[in-house]
Amino acid sequence: MRFVLLSCLITAVLGSGLYFAKLSVDEQYRTLKRLEEEIKIQTEHNYVLQAEWTFLTRPERLLELSESLLGMSPITPERILPITSIPIARAALMPSTNAVSEVKNVVY
Image 1 (tube, rainbow, N blue to C red):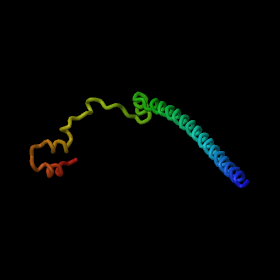
Image 2: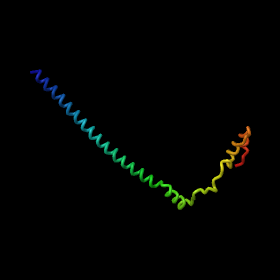
Image 3: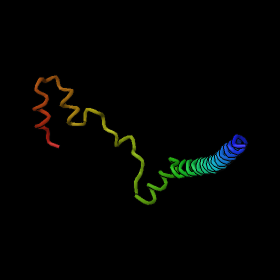
Image 4: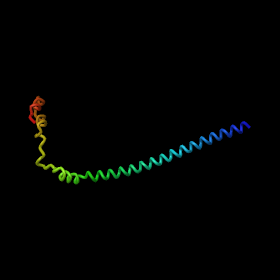
């Protein structure tokens, strides 16, 4: 008789443990599905944001905005100077061994 009662008690405890483990697994599965859905939504949202950013940073659009809002214009070839016109570069190209002191004497 004791053996039967003890077996029933052990079976009830193990059955309850198994039931609660199943509930925990089901809850974790629902959480996983919810997180996967959120990741999917955020990924789609990121694609939309990237497309918008690409659209807004088109070079022709930025050029138009810089001209209309800031009064800027593209650099013309006449405004580009050779590297030798930069004082530091000129001093570095000189064959002198005392180029550091000559760079200090250059007026900017």
